[in-house]
Image (tube, rainbow, N blue to C red):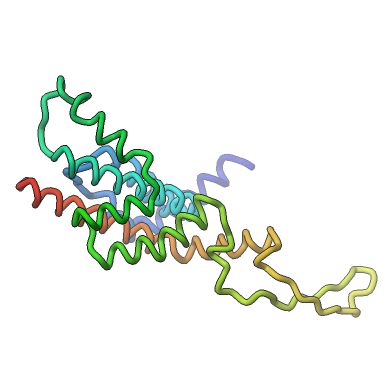
Amino acid sequence: MEKKVFEKAFSESLNKNFDNHSKFFEFEFYTYPELGSSIFEINKCLILGFYRASITLTNNVLERVLKLALIYNEVGIGPKPEENWNEIFSKPNEKYTSMPLGNSIEKCKKESLISEEEKKILFDTIRELMRNGFSHSDPSKILKDLPDEFKAYQSTFSNPQEIKEINLNHKVIPIFQSMQMDNFAKENAFEYFKFIFQLMKNIDNRLKAKFNIK
């Protein structure tokens, strides 16, 4: 494929989608500025229509932000002497970095870093649907509420007038699984990102309030 084909497609997507996404390039997280590059990358994926990539990276940011919230909740936020960083972060990093998502959600709620409503959405919907469905590549999580079968029609070039009706289960046939996953990603990637973006702001504000950061 020629370079100009990509340039045309990227240019059209940028012109079509930039206005709806531009405000998400303007943020300032006090607690975890290291996640800024990932936010930029997710937003660029959404602008260019890379919806699966956006969801997968949003999953990554979600898991990381909850772990960082727990780490900073334990060690505090604000300036710390560089010579003490190893000592300060070693134990919390060991404690939280490998924590499963479900445990991170529960612990963040216990520490009042997330609300009960946020916990319910994260645990009941996002953990199962978005994280397991995409990061674990499990289409059954996405397709479970669809009907098992749909009708399709088969014919041949040798006898195009003879049309046969067949029933197909798009929950188990890979090509149809992929089509449904693509549709789901396109419809939900932006809303998912917006929820996680707002969650990050909420956690950031709660930690700043806890440690009296203005």
